[in-house]
Length: 88
Length: 144
Image 1: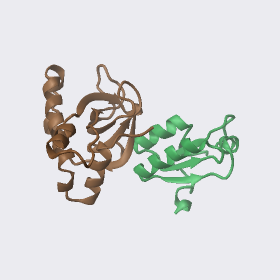
Image 2: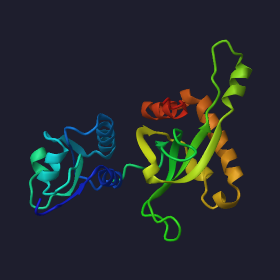
Image 3: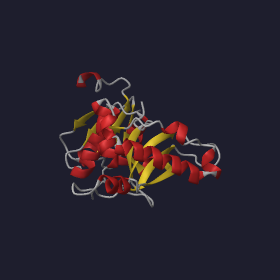
Image 4: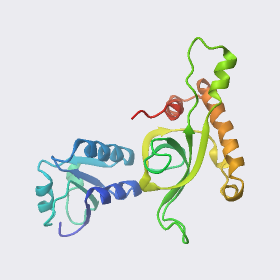
């Protein structure tokens, strides 16, 4: 997460999906099912891939280098990482 | 590549028309410079759908009950709208002219009512399957 941009959090993920800026959406394992379905549906409409992260929201937040939890993370710009290309 | 495009069926999530379905007429990304500085869209929806119709009713009664739709037109913040995968191919841009909305909103709603009613009564005429599914979905009340 050194280079590149990501939007952490449900609201900002929805915003990025609505504008079409999201390239990939990560959903934590303990995300409430209604919210998970909602994000998946919007990602389907936006033709954005969804990855179900195998870890809960605390782990996802830590993985992003933050001190808070994040149930939904949306990758806006990969930067140097190969997260988007390795998804293919 | 935004999700909310004109012709899409959306569900209104907030306000007086929460739970009603609408069609996006125009999407204004990044808002107006003066009062609405957020991305919003102009939608045309059904405030009150057509009355239920059963098999035993006469043709005249069916038509009368199908013409009881009440449309609405609204500028609504994109956050208060939930897009669906359905699309409707009604030509609403001509009907809902933005200049008219300031003064003659009643006229706009009257033309809308006519368009909606015609589409509702002639749902079989719509050709492609995808568009037919959109019209069917649009006129069905969202149950919650």
